[in-house]
Image (tube, rainbow, N blue to C red; front, side, top):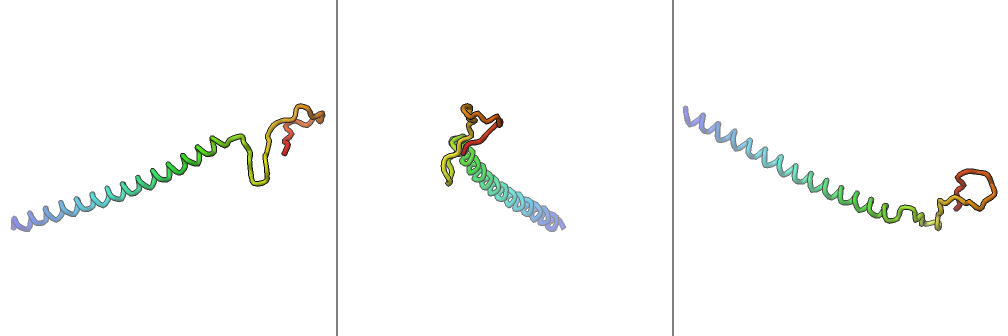
Length: 80
């Protein structure tokens, strides 16, 4: 009878151990994927920060300056 109890304890302990390992592997894989995604977002943010305000696009150079010399009384005129 004690063999059955000991066997049940060993089997349940092994099952818990295998489930824990599986969960750790899954968490590690998720952490690696998140790290790659965060690195990708950081690179995008860095490029955006470096080019902010330059306004160079496929159609030409875009200037978001306000023309002070313009006699027109419109506020916030955008010159393209």
